[in-house]
Length: 83
Image (cartoon, rainbow, N blue to C red; front, side):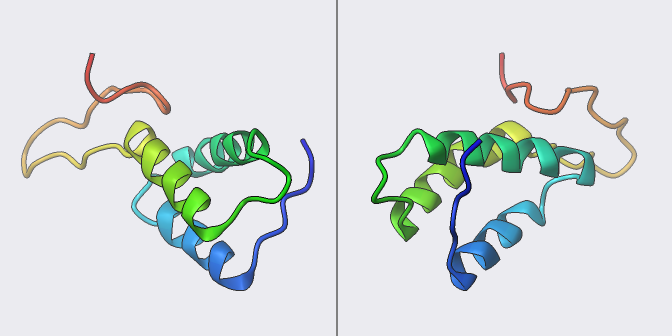
């Protein structure tokens, strides 16, 4: 996978996007983000394109925390939230 250069603020935004994800989902999420960004034209990624990719991918990797007293979801990392 080619190297992607991020500004400090872009990298901070990616790190912030990872915070609500479970630690086990973060690597897969960042790999998916990198794969999507590598599909963009050479003059990107810009702040808008990074935001769009992150916004599109976060729901697939975010595991909704269980409500108080409920069992934890058995959804696998990367599996869609709804079927």
